[in-house]
Image: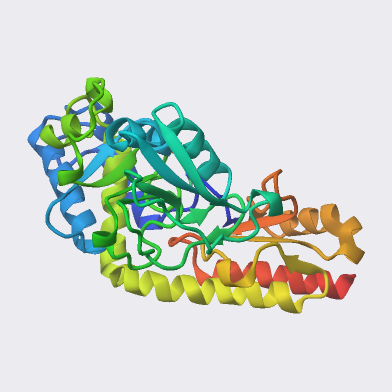
Length: 355
Ligand SMILES: *Cc1c(COP(=O)(O)O)cnc(C)c1O
């Protein structure tokens, strides 16, 4: 049976990424060796690293003065690396979900943290908009897409201080004005590559300003200096990321992705709003284009398990909502085709007819 992959992360990747990576795992760049067996310092892999950085910069239109790094440790390590490198006295955080809360908690180890606003009291169903970022903060940290709760900050915010963003689950889903940010990071396993690599886009001039001693591996300058090769980088996920970037460019880049992502999300949100059995969980203006959360309407609550089983029987994978929201979550990342969303919509309609 055809499987429709709505996993939240690790998640669906372009077929090209999977197939080209398999080929390179068998025979990398005509070396007769597997991608898993070659030195990361070989000229062939060096070429992969250079091309991945170049394409990453090109597709996101990253201005001069920024470095792009590929590191280990996941986005979660960035929760600590960011304050380690940037927090001298005080940082500001917008608390919009589980990941944002974790980032904030880590920053508290390094200095004063101002939580400028939080939607926790409403189970993170909206993005707070009325808040003041203290002008004496070293940076302001946001999570642009809240993977678990299905909300998203749709604009590049104007911030009076350096803006830092966790873009784990919406990187490359829309055009971003990188010049408005001092640092952007994310785990690659949502929209780019298999798990194991973390991207960091950092404005070089921000570094070297804090007075603390930074362990070598946690200092961004180490990785800038050595082109993400201070230690052995995760070669297979980086190779896969390059395949995804090539696929993205071929299709028309982030503008085209944004158009497609809006179409896909509209298709599903329209059905959630129309179908008598379901309702959305978040404020409409903050609805995520990447993670679409929905629950049964109150009078149909008892059908939740039945719908889940029905959807699974139709080939839907990964649509169970996160335990902190319940219900369902369909992640509609870049690589997910519109036809897959249509299949879920058809499934919701059929279930409505039967009930
Ligand atoms: C998945 C996710 C993380 C955690 O990423 P890891 O690479 O597993 O550490 C952090 N932030 C957001 C927004 C995420 O979606």
